[in-house]
Image (tube, rainbow, N blue to C red; front, side, top):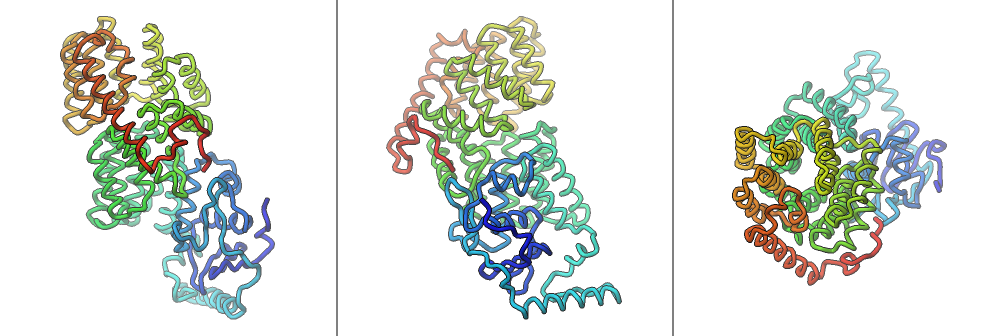
Length: 536
């Protein structure tokens, strides 16, 4: 329940801050602190609720007012507000995280405590500015306020305005908002082509448009170039490195992306966003212990990340803690209906456990919610192949390609189906095989790249080549031995000694890492066994 209505009070004193909601002004000892509109609204809600904490949902209802945003959007906005206030989340002065309840304002806001002298100084300054603007239009009302802020009084838009608004759109993680962010960052760069914040922001938005919203992969090259420009200008600041890591991640350059995220953490050791991204890439690279440790470090911080529960679930699944993994997967899928990766991961978990009907239901529910992603149809096609329903699988893979024509997995499955039905000509097989090999040689070393190639080789009947490719999965970081054993096109290889040797090698590595997790002092015992998922 809210404790106060800020609209009825002109001034609120918050420690050394003067908050004036009526004129949308925040200052410290007479010096204005300029806040983006969303940050200002977040502060207003904190004041209204103080001293009680504000839940994530209450922020969404009050600040975003019906716009679908993720929990991570709210926590990132809190982080931006803290930066504006000079606050430290580890040693907070103004905004405190309350585990499981949200955030609260620490200093009690006191109504009407603005000093008379300070108020008169500001009002006098405001009067002077109106007079001088009427005479010459070249002066500004306080000497400590940057002159470029004057443009807002005239109503024109500054570069910083474009950047602030673009950043707000980017934080929402929605396709339409992401495109708005791209457009606004480009407008900022049209005015200031060398603006590093705009370049880094545009790079992140372009990478997100490809990895989350099916945009043309060529945008990742532009994103990489922008990030490299930022790094050249500011090599000791992390934003350029963070943007570069995201672009490399999107291109499948697994090891370079890992190294670049590590560079971010060298510069900014407490950057939990980089930790969470690095945790995911270590998961892909087969370093399950490292991944889980990084994920738990982020989980134990006060920040929220959209994919964190999912990443913990995937690590638990790969380590063989299925009863512990399933509640995390279910929670993420149910609470993040817009998260395609949650539905995909939950369906894959059910598929590997041979619960095909349950997996199909999860995918159908996501599709009915309007989630338009190729990944859902690829999982559906897998289920249909495991049921030996090739026509249904063909329809699912066709749908995946309609949604995302450049999707490499969908293309590979189309070829594999053609090979299984004897419709793939040798020349077409060799051409596509060469393209897959060239992609890997160019730096796309994700385990899925090898898996797709081995699948095509096995479907075509080139079993020796398929086994050679499968033998590269271990070094590429592939650790899902149960999926490998279930993969539809590998059925003719199951009795091959080389195939069985790879299964055993991967399984032994998983057992080794599972034992390391069981011995680790940093792992809560309740995490590894069937317990309710803890609230944040």
